[in-house]
Amino acid sequence: MAKKSQETGARSEQLPPPEETPAAEGSTAEAHQERPDGGIWEHPHLWLFLIALGAALFAAFFLVRVITL
Image (cartoon, rainbow, N blue to C red; front, side, top):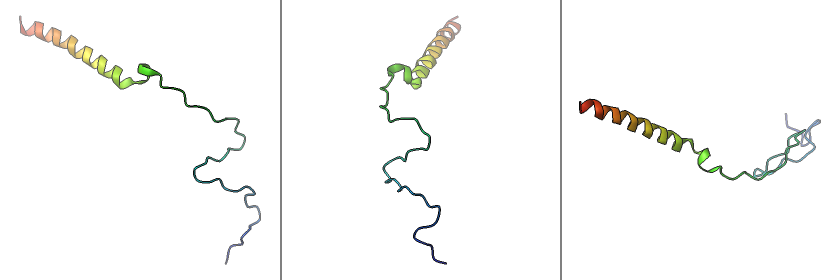
């Protein structure tokens, strides 16, 4: 059976182009600028590295003291 070109109950609005996001029904959100980078506070890998380095230095201090007894 062949499809009709216009079915009953079909969408009345045109589909948006692939590069555009369609509007959501009932959405009150508007387009907004992305906030700038928060600097060092938003880089947890750096903080993890600094904590691990501090723990390694702290452990090395006591390891050297035990070895030199």
